[in-house]
Length: 311
Figure 1 (cartoon, helix red, strand yellow):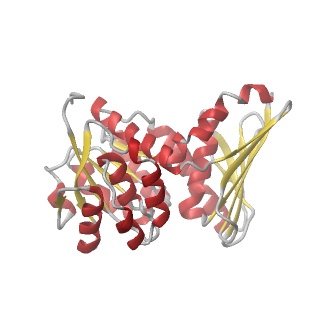
Figure 2 (figure 1 turned 90 degrees about the horizontal axis):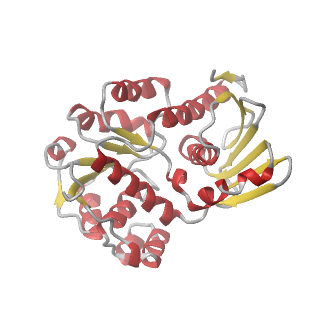
């Protein structure tokens, strides 16, 4: 596909508390309605879109079609983001778009919703976490192995804060410990910190995982080859934050990830570049390693803290 062609992209799905269909559509199309965002229950999203309105819009692509489970929500997203086409079913979108963004963050819905597009050979980006069971991860692994275009990650992979940190890691000496802290639940938000951790360290291979926490208070210990250990703590009732601290023999650094807009824009840009180039720019093996870690931590929790090997 030549870069000069305007890509028509469909966006599908809507899950409670997740404004990505609104925000990602605006970031790509360059259009937003601040009042409509507030009325939909996402005033903070409207605020960061307004603060970055001079950089909204990604050349060479547009969200041309939208589908959600609720036609009224679909129309609201379309009016908010300047999307011309509202369709009544997922299947109706096949043949009308060059690529699809699945904007739901409830992983149990991903296989069913992605299936029509994977079968049709349409490139798809799937919101984090890609899967939360080994069965679903195996399905996506098989789709990737058969040559389907599949990309999925947390946008924290592209956070400016973590990328800036990477230039400083060499000055910390050998790393011994990384700690990460975030709000909400392991199922949907643990993947954010795992992705930020792994991508900051150039995606090392985890050796084992152990969940030492409780319900709504996840404390996950990850061991890496060479002795590096990381703890990830995701607590439902703490104040909102996503932060990581890196401790080496000669120094340490704290990173707090705050600029959601910048990492969302870079994530969408990377997907669009990938579609233009004909293959995902993000190696699926990196995504698989992260999702395996997230799933293994949940398995450890369900087995009363048993160490789960990832070798």
